[in-house]
Image (cartoon, rainbow, N blue to C red; front, side, top):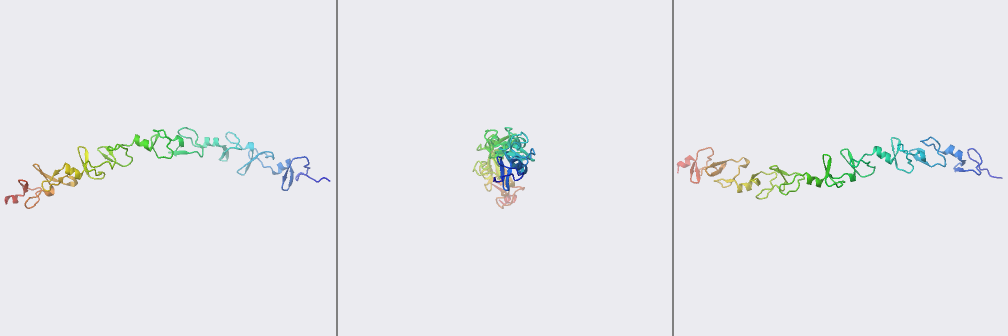
Length: 279
C-alpha cells in the first residue's frame, strides 16, 4: 500500500508536484506562498517562493520593488541611503543632499577627502593656493578676500620685508621711520646691541643706543667729562663753548650750585661771586 504524501495544509497529494519542506511538514507551492510568504512593502503583493526577497529595516521587498525613489534604479546590488524613510541610490543622495565643491562645482561624495572653510566645501585636490596652484591639503593657509594662499606664497607676496635682512616678517617686529625691522635686526649702529624695547636715538638716520650715541656724538660735560645726552629728563647748561650737566654746574671752590645764579668764569673754572671776591 502506497504511503500517504500530502500537503500539510490542503491535504492534496504531493506526488509529482513541487513542494517545500517545513519543520512541521511538506507544503504545496500555493499553500506555502499563502501561509509563509512575506508581503512586499512596496507593491503589497506576496513575495513568492521563486522570487528573490530583500529585507531592510523590518520590511520585505521584491527585488524589482527595492529601488531608488528618485531615479527608479534597482538597489538590490547597489549602495543606498535611507533619507526621511525614502530609499535613495548613492548618486541621487549625493546630488540632492551632499555639498558641492566650490571650485569644480561637482558633488563631494560621502567618505571622500574634503576641506570645509567659512561655510564652503572643496575636494581636497581642488583647494589650491592662488599663487603656486599647488594643493594646500592639511597645511596652514591664509585667506585674502576670495583667494587662498599657502603660508610661503602669502609671505612672499604680501608680508613686509625687514629693512636690514630683506627677509619677510611673519610675526612681531619693529617699525622705525615707517620701515619694518625684525626685532633681532634692529640693533645699535655702534655696538650692535638690540634696541627693541630700549631707549635709543639716531644720527644721520642710523639708530644708536644711548651709550654709543653719548660716546660718539653727545657734548661732554666740562666738569665730569661724561656725555650730556639729555635723556631721562636730564638738563644741561651751556656757556660759550662749554657745557655742564645741571648737577655739575657748581662753584669750583665751594661746590655751591650755580644753576640760576650769577657766576664768574675764571679761566677753565667757574666761581660763585663770593669765592671770586676772595681770590
